[in-house]
Length: 166
Image 1 (spheres, rainbow, N blue to C red):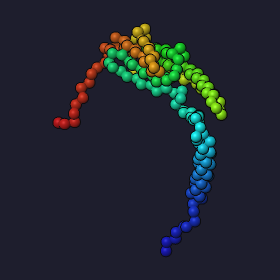
Image 2: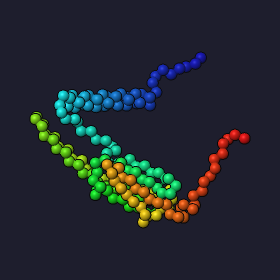
Image 3: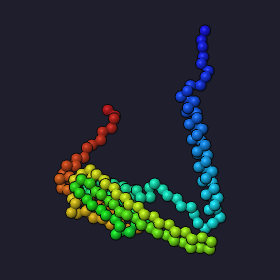
Image 4: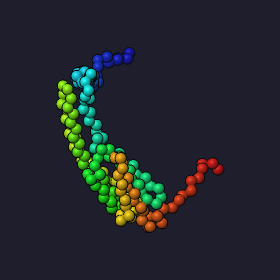
């Protein structure tokens, strides 16, 4: 004769309790979000939305064979607030964003202040000529060109790729 246990496992029961607690908290948060959304509906002002990437700029690093090109998205930043430093094996980009917005209209007065500091250090895959590095910032996009050293150019070796066919 086979016996089957039909009472719930204690650990599984705790998991169900926790899941229902999480659902209750999620439901509460959704209700609070709806209250704030309904408050701003029909007005000329949008609720403040902060994102985690606000002061973590997107960075692209490309190697075209002769130089390393680093592109950084810094919308709305003043060029004077950006610092770039290059060593033979890394580049550091840092800056501080300060933005104040004030809007007065019939029935409301809105003022926002956004401050934030960022710093990104990117290791460079090859030795670079620090003295010949150039940086340019146009329309919120910082472009940095860093030529490779002669030694790095000589060390590069093209490797032929073979197909799997025999």
